[in-house]
Image (cartoon, rainbow over all chains, first blue to last red; front, side):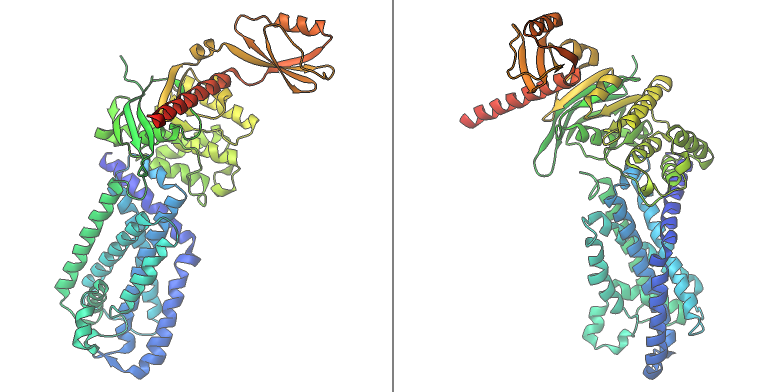
Length: 257
Length: 320
């Protein structure tokens, strides 16, 4: 395909993916907004006022970046996992497989669609948080950069999950039993400096901790871990997962018999 | 000499569970042909077409589409290929127009070209009025026509139709036949068809391959195949019921019910002899028709022969 044709194919897929989640916005955009509002009210306002400061900031200010990141992670992941698996389940993936569209375009199309939803929900949650606190960005470029990279990383993760899935249950196992615990234990609600040394060490193995901390650093200018390390880890994860996903597509894993 | 639209050499497919679906088949389909690939369920038809369309990974062999080796440049080969699968495979929650436009987009077709093409195809296939409706609201026949429209969006030179009229009523089936004939005749589109309606293959196709147990057991023209047919079964409706099966010298006669007989006529035998013999026995025939279409009889006899050969080979192997 020529570069123009590739651009048309990619745009077609991204447009289709974006249209899909906006068409069903009561299932995709509304629930995270309501859930996060509950977090802000209960943890931020009611309980947070009794907790006091965390790392020198009000508890509400501390949890806002983590909650935005949590929404971005879960929505990027689940968008691609459910959309790609639906395409597999309905066999509409065959529309793409019989076309001359390169596999990397298929992968990028779904990933960009997942990023669009993840970042869209992130913007909604940010707007909701403005009802509870004033947001200031110490490092705006870093903040935007890290949230975009995180959305990309989890979109690729969702894609691999959908490729491997045989039934709908298979796309809920990872979010329920892996993603959610890692997110809750990834420093969204607390600073790992509160933990004993051993658990601090264990927490350092959690990749989500790095993303939440860099994102929080962009907002507040404080982080439990070195920012450069965290950015390098995210980029490395993206490179590895993208390569795995593309290899699986090239070899027809989960989609060709 | 022009490259064949499709050329398959020594194509083998062994699935993960060890089942050998294709046992080194060879097949050529000439450009402009209307070609039938026939075979009973599980014979290897869909696996063959799946390999050609990149939905199934071959184990060994070579496939070229208009001379382009799919192992070397599948993307370029796919430009020439349109596929109408056996089962509905579009997102049923999308609008009809969005489904065909998205397919054009996957082939890199700009929207300014795709829109008029989509309108033309949807009008030709009687779906234009449904363009803004959800695809799940379409009837079964409309869904099949939508898949044909989608497959033709990028103007493929080779169209593969995997049982396109399965479950479609007679009237709609005939209108789809007419449409397929038209694109074959007027646009020169090569068409490969698999079907269970052998009447469809006899009516539409010029050449035919019969596949059974993963092997091509016959590859010839429909005309030559029919010429080889040496028996036909005729059903005779009688004016009055008969208690016993009448005897007709030289013919095999069976009773279908009390007022209907099935008579097997071999090549060279005269129909007049049947009516004379029945007349002499006081039996009056009011109407007559073929039991099944001719190609179907040929197909059934070939497949049955293949099955009995296979059973014999397996019995020999078991004894050894």
